[in-house]
Each structure stands twice: as structure tokens, then as C-alpha cells.
Amino acid sequence: MELFRKTLDPVIALSAIAVLDIFLFLIVGAWTVGGGETMMTGLIAQFFLGDTIDRIPFWHEVFKPDAGYWKIYISLGMLFGAIVGAVASKEFFWRFPKRLSEWVMITVGGLLMGIGIRLAFVCNVSTFFGLTPELNLGGYLAISGILAGAWFGSLIYKRVLEGG
View 1 (cartoon, helix red, strand yellow):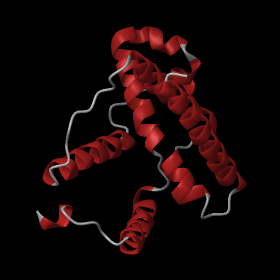
View 2 (cartoon, rainbow, N blue to C red; view 1 turned 120 degrees about the vertical axis):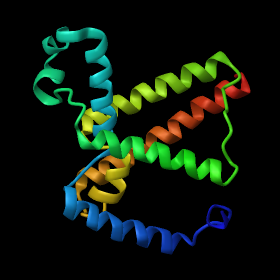
View 3 (cartoon, helix red, strand yellow; view 1 turned 180 degrees about the vertical axis):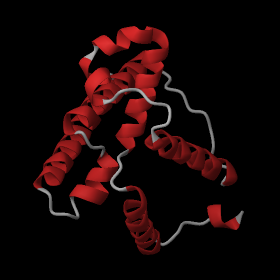
View 4 (cartoon, one colour; view 1 turned 90 degrees about the vertical axis):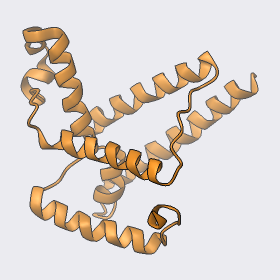
């Protein structure tokens, strides 16, 4: 497929995303990627913990696990679309870290991102495309934290890779 072999003009791509985002908001309201992953985590926890999960206030009062929660399917759809795009462009490769230290950094980084999503109750995608264009101070604070965290994390990663 030729569409996947060439890069789209960023202005055209972002304009299309903005227009589609307007329709998505009009149809289903605001959404965040973190909501789908959070619900999937709740369903997995419910599978392993059973009714014991009701003793955890977050899963009982804030995010009661529900397989019909529509944001799960947006998250799975994005994952599926990314895989299809990568396979269609012949850019799909399994890559694994070579050192234990990289596995540790990836795990800790993922945990910190998950904690950040819950603390901010928003994900980085909706921060960039939702809060920031609305001139919401929270969006700018979140982006400042994301940039500072990315800078600090890259220093740690570089130090570990250089072995110093």
C-alpha cells in the first residue's frame, strides 16, 4: 500500500486529526487514553482478585470494572491500527532490551507514567490536544512536567547506557 510508504505532510495530518477530534467530541464527549487502560487493568485485577477488588476504594467508587466501557475499545483500536500500519509499511519488528538495566528502566518508567495518569486524571495525548489548546493552566503544568521528566529520564538512560 503506497499510503503507508510515504510520510504525510504534518499540517495535513494534524488538520485531519483536529477535524476528526471535533466529531469524536461531538459524538461521544471527552475521552482519554488512560481511561481505557485503567479499565482494562481493573478487569484484569477483577479476574485475579474476584470480589476482593471491591475492598479497594478506587475500583469500587471511582472506576468500577465494566467490560462494556467504550474507552477500552478505542485503546484496543489504536493498538490494532498501529500494528496494521507497521505491518503494512513493513516496519513491524519485535525489539527487546538487551540489558537488565534497560528492562528495569522501562518498567519503572511505565509505572511512573501510570501513576502520573491517575494523579492528573488525564493522559499526555489529551493534555496536548485538549487542555493546552484550551489555554488550561493544568495542561501547561502537565506539559512542563512531561518535558522535565523526559529530560531527567534521558539523563538517567544515557548514564546507564554509558555505564557510568
